[in-house]
Length: 257
Image (cartoon, rainbow, N blue to C red; front, side, top):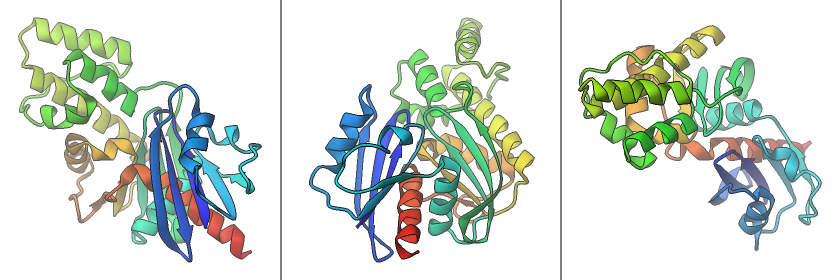
């Protein structure tokens, strides 16, 4: 078995592949001890090799796991994973816990051009998690809550702290909380659409990463990019496993060479 390990800021995903088929999937929160979490996730697994990706990929490169571990970038891993799910995909948007990536895909999941926001939490899962706390709503329910809005105000700041200030001010003005939540989501959708256009947005667009579970983000992204979910906007069943899948696919390529 070949393992793909995606060590993200919020969660760690593991995908095991054998003969081109996914045979194992595991997931756990990253916590403040990602190495221990990786060891726990790999407990009982036997592999020929592993490929790690994500912000913490270098943490496991030199660990004694009983098999060699190599690394690839998140960009390459998500490109390969997205192309595996949707070979017809032309562009990939990955919104994870700590960063956002826009990727122009070439045939075979190769990366043509990319742009990455990794300098702050603006427009990421962390941004949504933080702003959901303003409404005292679990982030998993924040998207559905925002879909209850119908007149989103303009949120000018993408800074997490300043966005909270804007949201609080809007509440004081009597703006419906659902509309404020929708406005926060819309600010992310517009920001990410600009990123996609800079790398050369082409369709179909594949939306991956943990934030792709959010129904409001899917709807607004479709509206902003002129796509249709399920047609020109494609979302895997488990979008947050895409990086680990891509890493495992790369591991299988290395094993054949």
